[in-house]
Image (cartoon, rainbow, N blue to C red; front, top):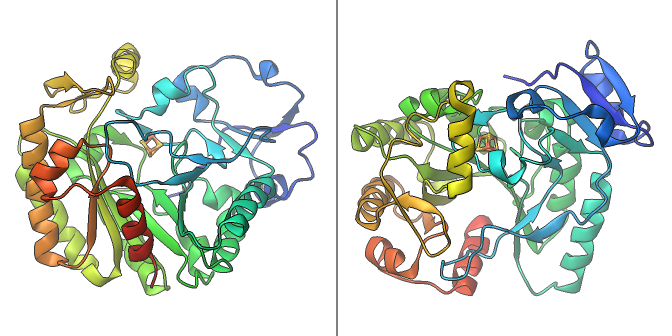
Length: 362
Ligand code: SF4
């Protein structure tokens, strides 16, 4: 599967960047046009914003602490690099519907070299530290890779550094570019996974489960470690059997030793996101995402009630432990009380970050 935009908008001044040159070469039949000011592109709805691609310079910082970290939740000290904004897929529960409401155009930045310079300065200033850095926060890490070829820049950069691991997180099967590159133990490719029923109902445009797993097998055979994010776990009728069947497919394809980490996270939505999802109505119905009864947490997000979250984490954890007893497993954005119940421990943010950085190396 590969995304082909209806139109590519190139900001004036970026025409000669390597990202634009790659995109032109990879999309010979696409319509390209230039613009001087984003206001010229006009406002469009969220679904339409995902059908064209804007290529423009990023003027702020690229590199930051994961914005999901909230006080009162155990945090894994993750750092994010934003090379794109928005995503060609359209998951019903995606927080970008709210987070990018005022700036929704699918965009790839044309100066990724500046972002890597920022990273370089931080890594060089702290050679004693190990950093986990991901590009899949405001975008899918690989969905645009067949168009921009960004991984050809990122993988060699991280392969040459001793104190960082890059995580490329995706719901695509766009791994062809990665297979010819040598990660030298510094790149983890990870998939957000859900049962077939949830993917079909909620994760519009993403790769089906067998395609994600087969892509994971291909990168694992090419020297990458892989990760899996059971996040969001979506409560729905039959969830236990559906997740069980998903794990059967996962462990038929991937060995526990190939896995750097599993994360588990409950579906969480702000009231504002729920309103946005409802407002989109038939355009992107969130049948399962909006079906569960939820309660508000200290961070203002709505989740299924604590007892059910713990039950889901325990069921999933049991299945992972049976197939991959040594794998690192962590909860994303959960309270110490839920960690204690589900995982029988409450690591500090620092301990968790160090454990994950160590688990990523091989
Ligand atoms: S793949 Fe991720 S970024 Fe893209 S729509 Fe789905 S949740 Fe949002």
